[in-house]
Image (cartoon, rainbow, N blue to C red; front, side, top):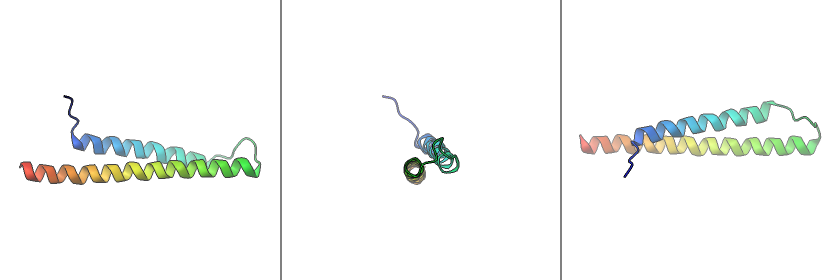
Length: 76
């Protein structure tokens, strides 16, 4: 069975969170082609969704890192 080290999982979660945060910042800063109020509102809510996903990625990274440290303490 393939076992992924828990520290690698934390780093991969950080990369995922960074990508989501990049897309969120891009969504907040780039104006839509059609500057109507509906498209601006839709773009902002989509950007907030990416912020939420970045938060989930950061939470997963923090939890993985903490559990990995605890596991190494028990093993060593």
